[in-house]
Length: 131
Image (cartoon, rainbow, N blue to C red):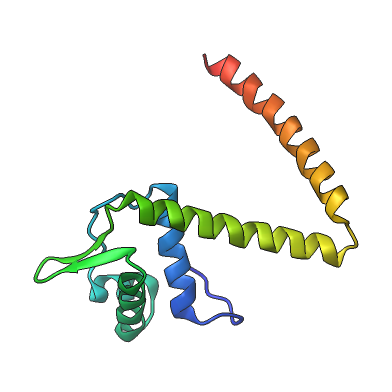
């Protein structure tokens, strides 16, 4: 993983783990790498990974089992909430960028509806080909 200088590394790693959970690459009750394994894999200090795991546990996204490791939550409500938070972040980023280039709320809505309609047609065509 390549890190940027605009955000603390531990937050970047936390966000990556959250995305992996939302995408289904990390499944409910799946064991995460140990702190040592994860730090070696990501090329960061073990203290950074310990902080990541502690923060994720505080947010109830993972839980620790003594002597066994750290596991992804099986609480679907937590995962659903996580998806909504990530969606909200992406929407906020989209709206902020549109405002910066002078796009009004009305035009944003129209552009978004147009885009969704266009991609819906592509999705339907792909489903037809696959079916």
